[in-house]
Image (cartoon, rainbow, N blue to C red; front, side, top):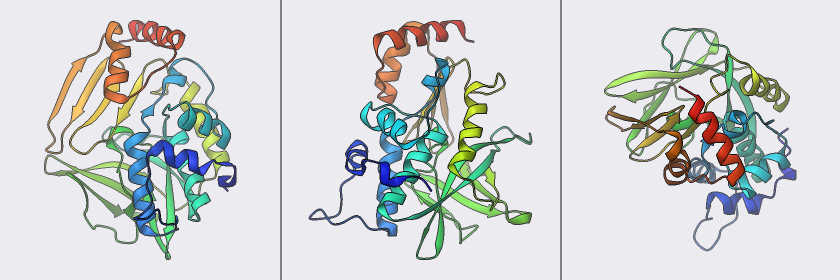
Length: 278
């Protein structure tokens, strides 16, 4: 489904800094490999919408993803991140299916399905895999068969709860309270569905990705998000720090905080867009 056979797996694994077990053991479609690949991907490939901000098309075919996220060492948003992860997991031998999720980080507002997540099955058990929810992303797979169980990922805690109709909700613990991140139904999504969703997210005037810079990165002790001019640092205890990032320091922040370096011309275009934003 995910055209994993087209992916240069060795290049992908080198990009994320993945190392096999002691002695360079063989990749296997097992839980330790799933954890290791997921962790390495989220730690290395930054969430970013810079092509969308520049008004450029977003390709979701494997070779386009490989060229951008692997060889050019760029990042991407959820459709890119999870399509690449799905291709890699499929190539390794995992059974992977897609899901469409509704974001719930804006209170009680009912939002459209605009987030792409993955479900990988290992020994008959489903695991949520998501490398594309920005700085709020889980950095490791989350079990779906044990709803309500608290999963610790370093200093961060997640759990999945079930609602009527088989809807599953990923929640994160912040400042002593559980908060919904997103909800998704059992209906499988396919790569072609992500093409349609990505078109909306990358071009519709109401999309939060259009017309401004969005760059985010989960982390062990601090998670950072640059949305427009606001740079936010989130800590495990729920504390946040915020500051404004002006056009004159955008390039330095992208490099220092997120490991992103663009060609001079593209950087100049981003600075102009950043300067015109709020």
